[in-house]
Image (cartoon, rainbow, N blue to C red; front, side):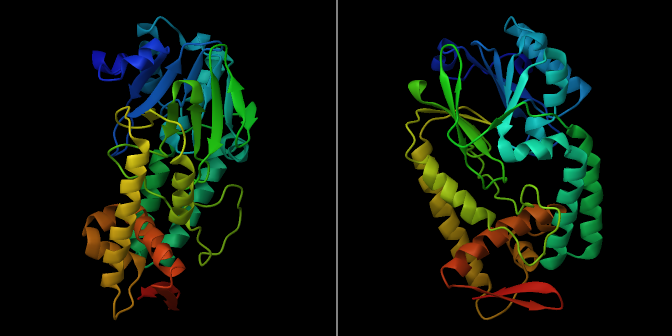
Amino acid sequence: MSERALVPEQRDPAELREAGVHRLSIATPFRIGRVNIYLIEDEPLTLIDAGPHSASNLKEVQAGLQALGHRIEEVQLLLITHQHLDHFGLAHAIAERSRCEVAAIAPLAGYLSAYDEEAERDDLFAADQMLRHGVPPETVASLRALAASFRSWGEGVEVTMPLSDGDVIALRDRRLKALFRPGHSPSDTIFLDEDRAMLYSGDHLIQKISSNAVITRPLGAERWEAKQRPASLLTYIDSLIATRPLPVEIVLAGHGEVFQGHAALIDERMRLYRRRAAKIRRLIAGRALSAHQIALQMWGNVAVSQAYLTASEVLGHLDLLIEEGQALETEAGGVALFEA
């Protein structure tokens, strides 16, 4: 384990250290790389997110806290930004050792407490969506097996402090406002420290990566029709529009560096969505294609190894085109097809 993984990144703004905020970078098994968790030295001693569940990651969190003069047992409050296991996976282990409060947006509480069952429903939903949108059955079976192999990086946890949109968490020296911003997932929650103009954004905003608005089963849904997919990108765009005017100078993201200029980043993301939607419209001009066929044309073999992520990306932009009357969805043999 490198020393750099145990201490806050030296490139973080001095304002963070002055505010008693420290970023710890924790390993994940995913292509995105390390995930950021944040320690807020306040009363109560607070963590934002936890990293994925593993014995080595728990040791990494413990070592990072020790480098800052703290122990896991001292954590009093754990805030969870959303339902992806690289952000909540260690929450149970941390709460078990510290007896801390665990806070998350209220609709997420049931998901986290019954994680194994909910994850299985997510995988079934994803399989139905992939088949609906032209991914070959053998690829779907392989990706289901891969998803199941990652499941142990999560562990169920009881939410003891359910939050509503706009709730304020009062610490001794600061107030954190919980703001519900679904789109990247159905449970994305950001935490705003307005006095310091700091935003803990989870995966809602990441500087160098455009957060994928994954087509995800709605929280609590036990039955679904593959035809009735959530319009995740449209939801995410609405959330970005709501975030843009916030009084923010520093964004503490779930991956990558701490950064500034959130409004300019959102504007650039909006332009990216328009450009990608226009490219997809050109691909379906004069012919009907499935989302998977479009993804193959855009990303080649990546659309096989990451079939669900790429299909979600395509479907989000198709939803943009459909909403504007620039694309039409039809069906042939149970597979959805799209044409200009």
